[in-house]
Image (cartoon, rainbow, N blue to C red; front, side):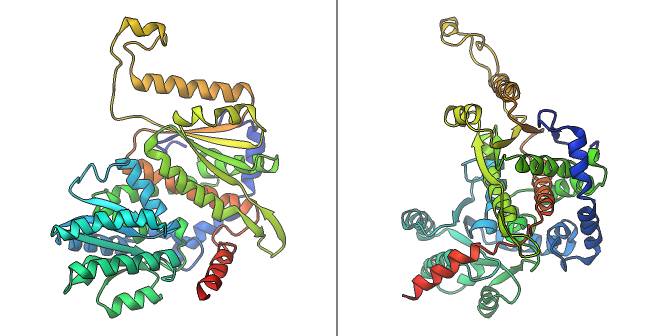
Length: 439
């Protein structure tokens, strides 16, 4: 894996190299399928891989980003849910944490991703405050189908609020990201609202490198070219048929082996608060892709890995007891990062009796020691894990990390003999919701 910038270590995965090689060899036909699909563009289920090389798409996004920046926007409201915003949130939070925008503090961002009335009321208050003071607000409504209940409900609310203050050219302050010819697309075209197309074969949870993620991130100042470059830089490795060169192949094989041995919980344990939302993005990717009632032939199988997210060091004080003392039903991926900042503790002798051996040492050294201690504890009790370390929370490494995970999950779906691109059971609650709304 010479071309990969992040460090992937699976020495403590509690599986042998022969086991990994045996399962990995089963993935060669799927790797060949993906390679064969590349010239087909957006015509196959692997369309999300094609977005990385779609220069026309990038040009369209960049053009619209620059166009909307000329409006001197103070606040961006992203209206979407699930795959329509989790990738955007993951990258934004990784780069900026809970701050609005460290690179461009003049632009605030809010995500309207729920019909929780209390939360929406607070966002509406903040947005109306901006509008009332004469500031400009941009709405990016994102829904692949153009008919997502929560998204359309929230769009109506914020559209009505926008029209209250932008009585003439309100449509200039909206961008609709959706499938071409969806109901939202048709509405937007009718009302002269700018649109960005989501390629039909690119599913929501695989859409972060499409206009779904690129427009809002680009508008906020994220280097989307570097983001895509990072994803492209790992693609060749993740499509290599030699198992030792392919990290997605290895991680999928290890996940599969542990699942078949009864470890049906996969915990993404991130040792960076800025990567919490990355873990939540992974949760949807895993849950929707491999949690299936039926296999590819329609046989009822009810398979699935349960994804969880833990944040270090905070969750060492909430769930570590369970993870280290509870049932052996979990497989863990530890994710750590080299911090940009360096903070040293002052040397205060009086505190030496509180905690030994930390006076004058750096916070990052303390973090590394804790991570090392956690891994040693897992290893001593034969709790399987792999480790990922990225050199920094930057666009290029986030692109690598997310592209690696998407291909890993495609491979895991293939091994489980399920379709990693559909989500038929999600439609069940939507159908029941529509029945209740009719009443």
